Structures are given as structure tokens and as C-alpha cells.
Amino acid sequence: MATLAASKMRPVFPATPLMRNVLLSERYQADIWLKREDLSPVRSYKLRGAFNAMRKVIPEKSLFVCASAGNHAQGVAFMCKHFGVKGVIFMPVTTPEQKILKTRMFGGDSVEVRLIGDYFDASLAAAQTFCAAEGGHFLSPFDDEDVIEGQASVAVEIEQELGRVPDHIVLPVGGGGISAGTRGYFGDACRYTLVEPTGAQSLARALEEGAPVDVSPIDSFVDGAAVAKIGVRTFERLKSVDPADVIALDEDRICCTIIEMLNVEGIVLEPAGAMAIEALGEVADQIRGKTVVCIASGGNFDFERLPEVKERAQRYAGLKKYFILRLPQRPGALRDFLDMLGPHDNITRFEYMKKSARNFGSVLIGIETDAPENFPAMFERIDGAGFTYTDITNDETLAQFVI
Image 1: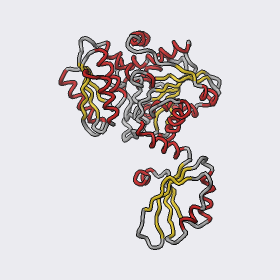
Image 2 (image 1 turned 180 degrees about the horizontal axis):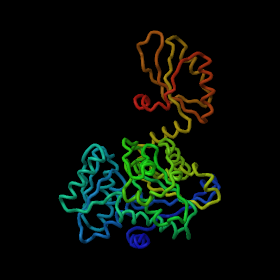
Image 3 (image 1 turned 60 degrees about the vertical axis):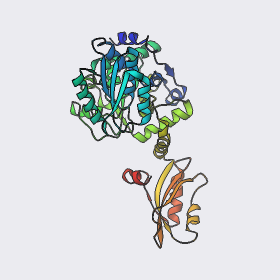
Image 4 (image 1 turned 90 degrees about the vertical axis):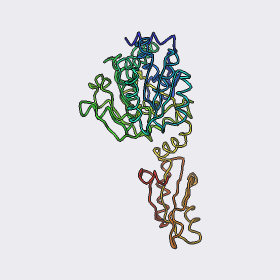
């Protein structure tokens, strides 16, 4: 059925390219390919499931309803315009304006966007209530048989473009739609690595408990995969996965791949779209000499987030640190501290936090360097000079207030 779904899509949009990546292939001594879902018309795979689910109920249904703060909304909007049907999309009030504008752009006059609630749960409840009252067709972002079948078209294209089933597939997991569809299509013909963000490990917890469980509160940074509870239907297809094949990646670590892919390869990926690539480092021994496909699930990246992404990547890589320095209030104290810095250490932030102290002042300092091994030597010099400081780089509670 996934093969049929894929063939039905072709008049609507072309298959996304499967591209061999030389950088990654050489790094991991494997034949590594990227399935570029970031190059779909809506820059993610989500329009596949929307298309497949909608085509099966048109013309009986002409009103489609969904709740989404991102890629699913854009996929539904694109398909509503294509099919010439009405769509009502509920989004949280806090959704970035860029995503709202893109959803309206893809849907045109066919789509109405309603901003309801501060969080997704409120938008979802409003959407389901509206849908039931109006007799519309609710389009789940992942927990729907037709949506899962539509997402499986990614696997169909991989086999067609590669000419065979790959040895290993690495793909992200949020609600489980694309992972369930891919695994349902390829079965046991290849090995899988399923990747979740550390702040939203819904599949790992479901495998522990034997059923989907709510893992709230979650970290929403990897918004394309930050799902508090994996779908019931998707988990049915994933429940036999070996827990050892499910890995979690720190959100800051994912930022390293976003920056590298942008700077080196010129590929714009959202956090969820970068997860499969970053995960290669976790399975390097398994994939050596193998043909591997990483699913780059999306590229809807708001460039206003780039400074944050760069910051998080530098902190994870050990190239940037923040600390609070207790600076003596005497002439020359600041110059003495500056003498402790090496030739590649740059101050990126300097802010007095207490300006009324008579003997000492607290200073927030951010320092960036070009190699992580520069910091131990710098701190050794500072310690030797008798300065007192507190490293707050990894203190998330404190950092969110002062950094």
C-alpha cells in the first residue's frame, strides 16, 4: 500500500532526492546517503501523510481539521490548497510568526488558521471539539493509519533511488509516524537506529513500560520531534524494537550538526532534521563498511534561532564557557585578570552583576576559544593568581536567568 501511496503522490510533488554525502562517508568509513526531506515542497515529510489521508476520504469529506505548531500544519495547508478543500488549522498563540505565515502561504484561501491557547494541548482540544461539532475529518500528525502509510512512501523512494534496501537506516522519532512507516515497509530487511531528543524520550519510555506513556514535561527545542507521548498506532509497529537501537541525543549536541551542515555542506536543517546525522557517531562501529541512509526529516529552520543554536553548539563542544568572577575592587584588578587569558581566548560577554560592593564585585563573563583544551590552562592561571570564580556553563537553572 505504501508503494501505491508513493505513486499517487508523483503528480503532486516529485520524490525527494537521496544524496550520497562524501564528508560523512569518509568520516565514518561507510557509504552514507541523506534522504533529503528538507527539499520537499514544504521542507519536511509531513505533506506525505496529509496527502495520503486526505485522498482516501475526498470527496466524502471536504472539511479537514488539524492542530499543529509546525510542519504538520504546513503539510495539511499545502494539500488543502491542492485538493481545493477547506482546512481549519489550530495553532498555539505562542507559535512563531514565521510558521503561521508559511502555513497561510501554503494554504492560501483554502485554509483558516486559528490561534488558541498558550500550549499545544489547548490547541489540540479546541481542534477536536471544533471538528466533532462541524463534522470535519481530523488529521492526526502521526497516530493515523493512513498518515503512517503516507510517511512510508519515504522508504519506497529510498529503495527505488538506491536500487536496493540499505544495510542500516537512521531516523528521528517524535510521534513515530515516519519510523513506524519505514519499519513497516522494510521489516527486518535492514537494521534501524531510532533517535530521540533527550528532553522527549517517548519511545524509550514506552518500550520500558510496554505501552505509550506521557513523559511530560518535555524540552521543546527539537520541536519537530518533541512529543510527550508516542502514538498508539505507531507504537504498535515499534513495540518490538530493541531498546538498544533507540538512542537519545542532547539538544545542545544536535546544534553541532546544524551548524556543521550549514557551514560545510550548505544544508539548512531544523533540529529534528539533524538528529539522524548527529546519531552516526553513536553507531560508528555498527555502520563501518555498510550502506547507511539518514533521513533528514525537515529544514524548516527560523534563522532568528541561529544565534541560540550557535551558542548551544559552542557550549556543548567546550568552545565557550560562562562563569561568575569575584573581582577585587582595586585599581589594576581587571588588567590582572585579562593577563590570564591566552592568545585564542576572547571575551564575548562582560557584565557587572553587583556594582555596590566595596571590596569585591561579581562579574558575569563569557569566554570563547578555538579549542576546548585551552580552558584548563586558562583556569589554572586564574587559580594561580588567586581569583575566585564559579563556572555556570552547565548550570541550566542559573544560566537561563543570566546568559
